[in-house]
Image 1 (cartoon, rainbow, N blue to C red):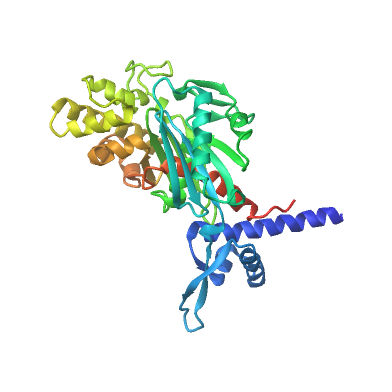
Image 2: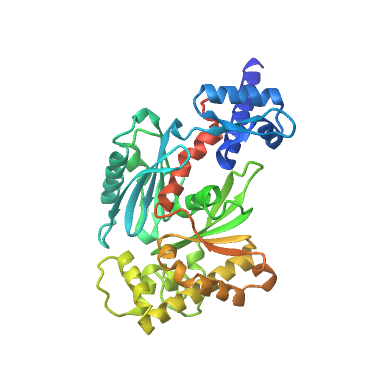
Length: 393
């Protein structure tokens, strides 16, 4: 009975710390009164927990604000310098490793392009480890809270990764990395982790239900939903890129025909253009195509067709999921977004049910060039928030 009571007390302490820490982390500075109102915890509990978080170095005072007729209220914030996290983006065209502070501000990045023949798992792992070593060289190893890795595929419970866009099937990525990574390691699908980041820090922040589309060589999506009163979010992936938008259409790498990815994936876009381009890598060729679209009618038509197919794909999401926001993210969205966003919205308007379209915003991601690595970095942060920043074993 005593052990059960002790366990219950530890669980309650962890829950209270997690609730208040998450509220401060996700919503920004707040006062003890605001924390009490948002969490439903008593004034004494909030004061005790905040005192512990300050003592642990996770929370600090952040000035004060006037209150209605009373003394100014002291604001509290999560200390960005409490620790750092690493996020790794294993993409089809590059490996990018980012170092972020505790509140996900970028401190350093290392990017390694991948050629078409360089997706061998051993080589990719070497580049990941090289990047981690590079970005963490100047920090205290004890301050590293964890390493998150995002991959364009499914991560099985046994740590095996199935990533068709990388031609990986059953790759033991987790064990390959864990033997050389001293910090806690977390691996997940990159669309899911990007969805988490967009809900926390990006275009999905004010949404209750958002679809985050990840556009690259492959095409994926995550459905992200605000989960509780302090806006931590849950995110699930969907094989949106393999929904059919053209019966009997272009061949897709999955073996089917007419999949969305066969029309809006980077290689598919370049393939429709068909003319030689001077750039050597996929990303640079797509940038060149967009630039040519200003003067070349064929390039302009390719961009227009891409917007139409993407709009059809987004309209399917709108009709099926009724999100209040669709966010177009990933490097292809960054390259093409400004040139075709209006056309995508127009296509969605024509293909989606009017009353659902009227409830949905469609916009570009806001997280910048490190967005997928940033998404991966949310994995160790999630663990930190869930535990309340402390082990209660």
